[in-house]
Amino acid sequence: MQTALGDGEDGRRELELALGERINALVSATRALSERSAAHFHAELQPAAFHIARWLYAFGPARPSVIAEAVGMDRSSTSTLIAKMRSLGLLDSSPAPDDRRSIIVQLSEQGRQRVAATLQERGKEFYTRTQDWSNDDLARLTELLGRLTSDRFI
Image (cartoon, rainbow, N blue to C red; front, side, top):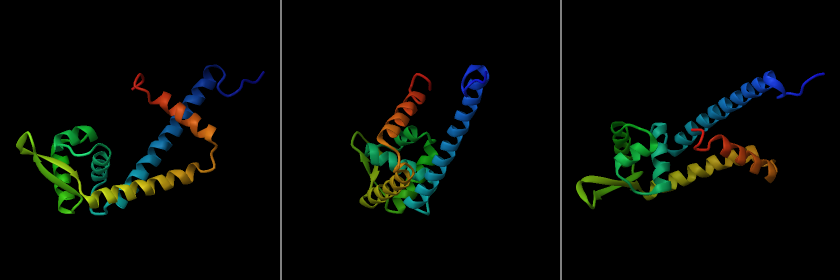
């Protein structure tokens, strides 16, 4: 009697390997999309600058140290990128109200427009990949990814 894929220990192992391959493909595709998005945001900046800009777009003004921690970068690299982004007109800064030696950084109007345009481009690419999927397929994938990435496993 032949067993279905996933039945028994060997089937489970095959499924786990296949899942690992699909996750690796997803991570690679995501990295490639992030690189293209960063270049779309501003060709003169490193990809990490787009992560800073996207974080500021989502969460608003903050101290450079808060941004560095939030995006997983060291403070020195973050400060260097923030300085470059300010020189390109993508960020504005002002003294922190509680400590005049510290600054608060926020996206400039140009920075907000560039992030919005870049996110719109990302969305188009994602939509192209899923436009023929049913709502049930999208809901199921969302549910499964939620289970896979839940805090109890990370």
